[in-house]
Amino acid sequence: MQSRRIVICAFFLLISLAGSLLLLKKAMDAGSEERYLLAEARYRRDQRLYQLALEDYAALYAKAPSYDLYTEYLKTAEEYHADRGDGPSASAVRSILEKGTADYPKVAEYWERIAEDYRSGGQLQRAYDTIVASEREGVNSDKLTAMKRELYYAYRISGFGYELLTVTSMNSVFYAENSSGNQFILNGEGTIVLENRDLLGRPSENGFFLIQYSENELAIVDTRGIPFARFPGKAVRAFGLGSELIPILPPESKTWHYIGTDGSDKFGGFLTASTFQSGFAAVQAAANEWTLIDTEGNAREKYEEIRINEDGRWLINGRALAKSGGKWRICELREGTLHPVSDFACTGIGENWGAPIAFEDNGKWGFVSPDGSVVIPPTYAGAKSFRGGFGAVNDGSGWGFLDGSLRIAVPCTLFDVGYFRPGSSVCPVRAEETSRWQLLTWSVKR
Picture 1: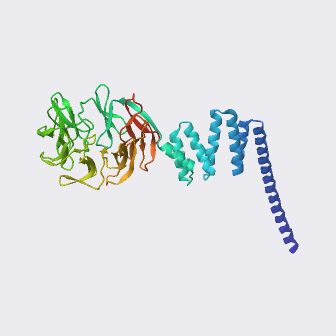
Picture 2 (picture 1 turned 180 degrees about the horizontal axis):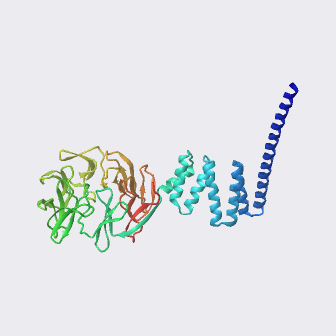
Picture 3 (picture 1 turned 90 degrees about the vertical axis):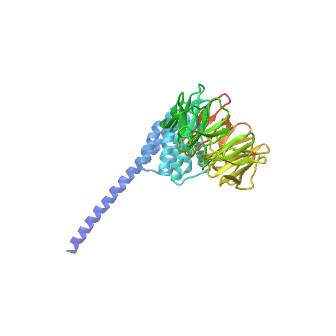
C-alpha cells in the first residue's frame, strides 16, 4: 500500500517537472525569438535599411517593452530621419515620441520635442495642446513653460481692412467704417452683424444706439438693427442711450444736444457731450470748461476737462478722470461732484476702462491703478490703458501689448493698436503705416 502511494507521488512529480521544462523551453524559445529580432533590427539599422529595422523594433517592443529598447527604437527612427529628411521619416520620429509620452509620461524631453515639432511645422494649436497634456501628467520644464507662453500669445492679423475700427461699450461689439464711408457693427470675432444703416455712433452698454432710419427719421435700434423707437429728426453723430437721453450732433451744428427716446430736444449747446451714467453726463461748455450735468441739464462744479472714452462713457466702475489746475486726477462720483481718490496727479492720461490706466509725466508713459497706485512708473514712449487683460505700450519703435503680469505679450512691432475687450480674443491693429485697421486674433484657443 505504501509503495503504491510512492509510485503515485512520483508520477505527479514527473508530470510537474515535465510542465516546468515545457514552460522553460517556451520561455527560451521566446527569448531566442526576441534576441533574433533584436539582432535582425540592429543589422538592418547598420545596413541603413531603416524601414525594415523599424518594423522589427516595433514588433519587438510590442512583445517585450522596456525603456532601453524604446531608447534604441527612437534612436533608429532619428537616424532614419537624418538619412532621409522627408515627411515620412519625420512622422516616424513623432509617432515614436508620442508612444514615449504614453509609456514614459514623466520624461519632459519627449513632450518638448513633440511640441517643438508641431510648432516648427506651423501647427500651433497642436503644439499648445501637447504642452497642456504634459501639464496634466505633472510634467514641467523651463523649455515647456517658455514655449507655452510663446504659443499662448502667438497671433495673426486677419480680416478686411477698415479705415476706422474701434471698441464700443458692449464687450462683444466693434464699430467700423470702410473707405467708402459705409458703417458696420462687428461681433467679438470680427463678423459683420449690421451694415450700411447710417449708424450714428457706437452701441451703449444696454446695446442700443441711434441710426438715421430714413432721410428725416431717426431710430433707436439694437445690434440686430431692430428698432426700439422711431421719431422725426436728423443727426450726423451720436453716442449711446443713457437715462432715457441720447447725445446727438445735428446736421450743420457745432454743438451737441440731448434728445429723449421720443425725439424731443431736451437741452444742448455743448461742444462735447457724453452718454448719461448714474444720472449725470460730462459735457464741454467752452474751451477748458467742462462740467457734469443732471438729467434736467443743470450744471455742477467746473473742471478743465473730463475724459470721455471713445465709446462716449466717462464713468467706469465708479471712477472718472478729471483735470484741474493743469493736473489729471482719478476721481469718484459723490452727489454730482468728482472727488480725487488719492494724491495721484499727472500731466497726461489715457482712457479709463476699469483696469490700470495709462498716464504721462515728463514725456514718458506708465500705468496707474484705478485707486491711484502707480503700477508702472513712466517708462515708455507711449501707452494705452489696460482693457480685456492687456495694456498697449510703445517702446519708441512700435506698439505692442503687456499682459496682466506686466510682461511683454506682443512685441512692439505694430504701427498702431486699439483695445482688447473683456471676453474677446481680437483687437483692432494697424500692422504698418500704410495698413488699414484689421483684427489681431490669437492663433491658439485657450
